Image (cartoon, rainbow, N blue to C red):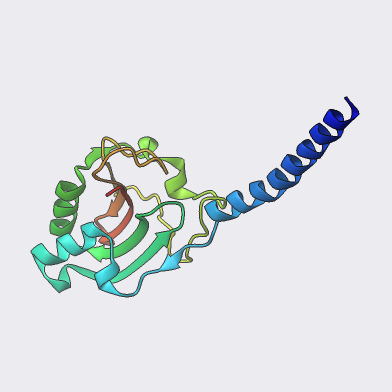
Length: 167
């Protein structure tokens, strides 16, 4: 009986030590900072698709940030024409939505999901238009299609997009 109790306590101690190390490791995996994407060949699919259809001048001042929260999660911004926004809406199946329907994470990404770059600062303006794919759920990629949520300010022609894709 004494041998079983010692074995049980030893197993409990081993599991406790393992979990006390595993939990911080898993949290770290999910909260690593993101990565700036400078090579246009590694841009998200939707950016490359719009560039293919409209040419390399479809966007100006493109900034792309790869979130480490998933395989193909990106936030990006660019100066874009209304034509580029139309193609983006087709590629991502986005519909116009109200500002209140935009996921709160779009405005303030939780720090345990990813650090955010300084340039990610979408401002809620009166002229802004909001779009979202019907199957977009923050950090839950459940379809094999490209999902996105976006804000477009037609006055400034500034486009902010959070896209996620599960190949």
